[in-house]
Length: 103
Image (cartoon, rainbow, N blue to C red; front, side, top):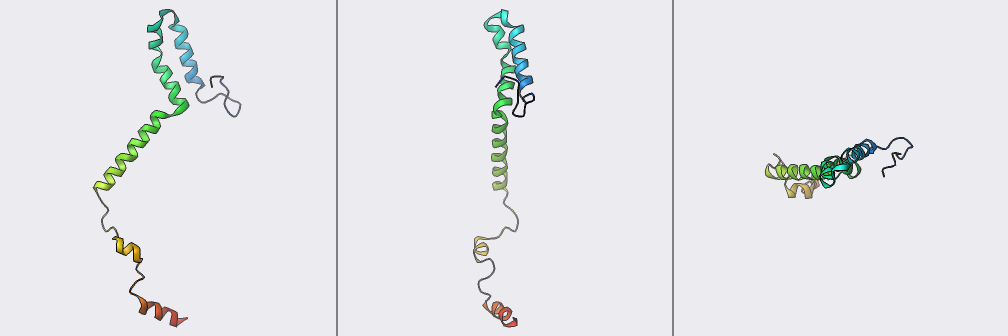
């Protein structure tokens, strides 16, 4: 986690955030509980780097908004259910017979 080594041997992607948290704790350690509160933003950044929860939430909200906007404005010339089911093949037996006769 905070060892500083990534999967490939180098520094991990979140190590700079962990260093920032440690530095904040060292600087504010003498202030007691109020010192810890000063480090909350740095700790949140570190946890976001590890888990990407805020980014995932933002992505889900954007996708929901896109779906809502798409549902509010349906496509022009969208095919109807009957057209999709038939794929334009039903009712064209004569054309199919002509194509088969040419072979």
